[in-house]
Length: 73
Image (cartoon, rainbow, N blue to C red; front, side):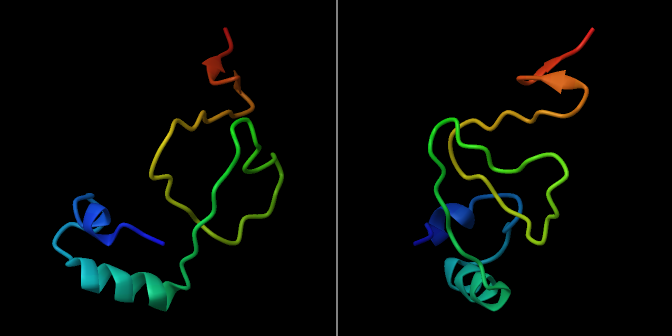
């Protein structure tokens, strides 16, 4: 499910072994989800009950002050 060896190389899990990371994520109830290209992850106004980490591909952050990731003039 998770590449614990890879996660151990990230700043978030710096100093933790793959085994420790596996235990931490288990205690936190972590789960994995894949998104299709172009699929919306959140909609403005959605209530957020979880946080997430994106481990691959590009994510464009769009805010009310941006359109398609580009700042409005």
